[in-house]
Image (cartoon, rainbow, N blue to C red; front, side, top):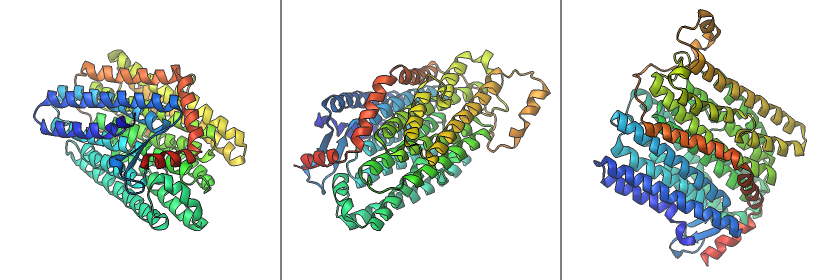
Length: 518
């Protein structure tokens, strides 16, 4: 099984090289990209079953170099699960982009650039999930960020270049902080291997541990778009092409959340910053959802809900119990799938109506009933209506918080419920205005939503375009995956609970990486 682990990264990199060589052959690039991500999905699924049934993780010392000099790739339940979910999402968005490119002549996603960049992005995401040392985690971040710089500016429009510059600057600041933290950890402990860091961290004075801890948290919080470091996200994501926005929203911030979970549970388990994290989670949820309510453009609404729901994951991490960590992992999986699906559905709305402004889009229920269903199901799921996975994940988080019973936990539970209700309100208001409002609705209806007229970035109307069947099919497939998260919530949640239990036992990580070195 260990021979399969490096393939999670090398296959996308090889696929990117082949796609770059075949730059003028559209069909070849599409086949290479689809086959590559399909193979990664199969390999990751096999690894997930192997580590879950065998009850032990797989650590591979690349090239046979001993720790701490070599690169250790580490696949436990958490890493395998996230690679499986990420590869499924990447494959679905790729199919969506193929349909868009075939219909539009690749104006939005130039094929010679898009496919190599997309596969490099995938390699960076997978490398980050299976990294066994902090520097390799940094490398994974940089790989995906370099690719994202290209993807977010595709089309070279003025708005994309402008927001792309902001995205790049913020990402570079985060990377500098991360690299500085790695240098400080290496200077203090003589290693960047997470197994050895977990062993040696307790030898440092508490004030030094706290500085290292907060440095890493700050770097990851920027990448995860945690308030008040989330200012860049609502302006950056909506300007990118629909497939790029979908994969960014679903995955990039979750890599930051993953890094927070991994380091908090296995490197700084004895350092208590949970109260700080709870306050940050509270602010992230409330500020994010209030921003969503104030928007009149669908992509910006979803971008603000993305920020607010990162707060739920930070909330679960701050509770710091096995049950809470398991619930956080389940909610992360749910949010990756549902948020991506909603952005794909909004991409369909944009093509059908020529706009994503809820002030302009009308009457889609009659004109596009299939799109109405594809938007409605993930929307109510994200809003947390039972029995969907959003409700299951939030209920599990609230239950873990209630077991603590402290006043701050009660405040967070109330804030979580309010955030969920306001999310549902923002998404259903958009549903009502875009799908149920008729072209000849009265001036009274327009007056009721006049307060949204000053909302920023309402967007310009564009030409209404045909929707290829593959784009609808890819979105429908993702909707089916969101439903599967509910239907198979029991087995999936059991896996997440086992992840939560294992993450709070870093000795397993130490032993496995030492065995890999030998």
